[in-house]
Image (cartoon, rainbow, N blue to C red; front, side):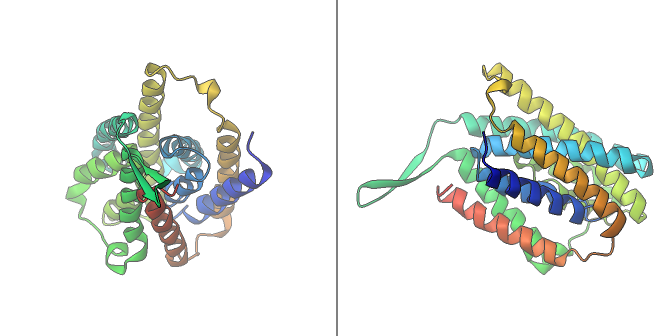
Length: 266
């Protein structure tokens, strides 16, 4: 059973991230993955993040889904769903890879680097650049590239959960109003989450796993409830909050935990 500090860290992170990312369309998954990685193996941290992210998107769709742009959802969402399947299966392949590298100091093992830790850590560092470097923060794409955006966002969403930054970059240039942007983001995010969670669960069950043995359900549930509260607060009060400070905080956290995973510290 997780301790009180674990609940506090997960709930606080989910509450703040969900509230502050209402209008950016990304940030909850990028922040929750390194937080969950502190408590679970990295592949299970991806699954736990997906569950919280998915529950949050269900809630957002119920509030804002009616504002979604159907054309944008179809052009972006259909390719994202297909790509998310391949991304989730790639994660499973890395998680099952038996190879690892042990780092020793004075003939004493100090860390073990597995393929899944290295790949997820590398991706976290890469996506930290989207939050930290001005050139990436201003990255936008034309509307005709929506299917390509769906492929990239969906694949990385299935692989590591980092889908929102790319999705927002592609959707930002589509001429949507704020309401349609938020609604479309929520619907597409929900579709990708539903797809990757289904693949995760199917692969987990096929491998002989038992969801009842997963000890992270209390943290997932508390994170989801805290995210719901963050969405409600964000919807009412935080629409004028600048995202620069949030992007910087998320980027630093991603970069730090990504380095720790790459070098086998976590």
